[in-house]
Image (cartoon, rainbow, N blue to C red; front, side, top):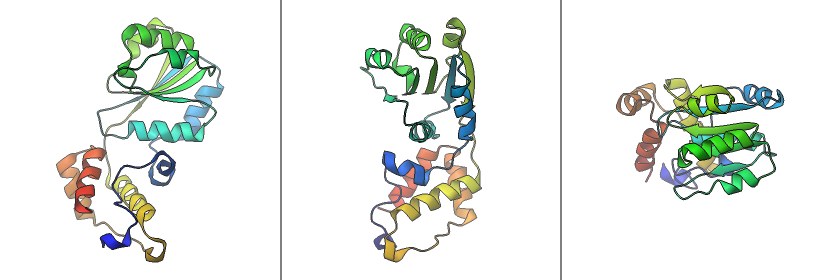
Length: 194
């Protein structure tokens, strides 16, 4: 079966592949409306690690490429974000900014769409920024099956294209073991296809 694929279907997804693998958890029209409404707003993608927040943030930014995305790390400087001309920014891992920097960011940018493990509601209240929360919690067999099939389809060799079926019992077993931790499920499937 492994010979039917160009690469392990459950290896990391490159940014340009996100659109082919994602099953969006919310309509993009909600985000577009919030941006076009011309109000000061923070859009918070919140959940534990491995629930799909970063993937959704990348997907959103790809649908709205006129706005920049910033992937933050431990030693990130806020200067680059603040100096960018755009009033709308996507920020992955906002927890890498300290409280003062988050306040600066929320004051400087009209719309901040970001990922976080914990709510940044206090920062919004202090900067008088409206908050829209999108929670990443829970899992269902239908969505998981679609994500798995999308990844398998992306990795299949053109001359080997065929409908792959993952049984409901296999999916239930994965959910029983990993809950809604998509990353944990994908990592397990990666091992199976090594």
